[in-house]
Length: 209
Image (cartoon, rainbow, N blue to C red; front, side, top):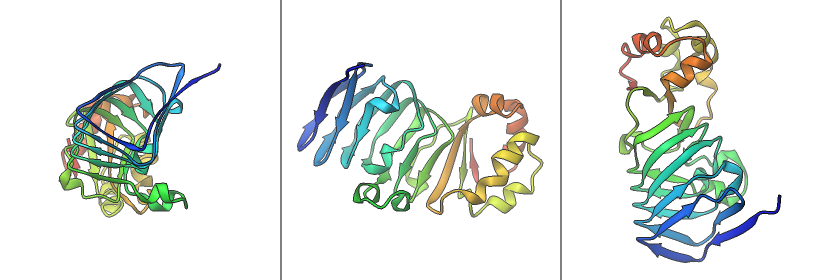
């Protein structure tokens, strides 16, 4: 398939609406690009979307299809942004150890609102989670998953979730400050129920739900 390529770079856009929705297009949001008070509608897969060293300020992202395993957020700066829609396996924030090139060292997230998003297996790196608004139940968020890993492992979790997710929290990248899951999705994957997960979640003050 021959893709059309659309580039946004070397400019500042304000109060614009960008619809990145064509499955036959590769979208490049590139260097020296600043978007302020813009609305971005995303309805393409991760392989169609490239974000490099962009400054997003007070922008809204409307994710119209599940954005899976997308790490380009950690190449850019997100300040005061709002996210809506479904994302899974995505990383946000500052994770300079991920790769050696400069782009990965410029990731930033602060004052962002995910309350209208559905996140599953998403991580927040190298940031202050107190500045973020995480989605509520049926999503839940582990705060300081590495530091609290021993405490979390002490609980009796549903078997597969405990063995696959909780037992491995201490192996998250050192920059990880929070991880968010969508209870119905992870419960289905781990052969349990949201209710069984919540019964344990409610015991911890380091879990937002």
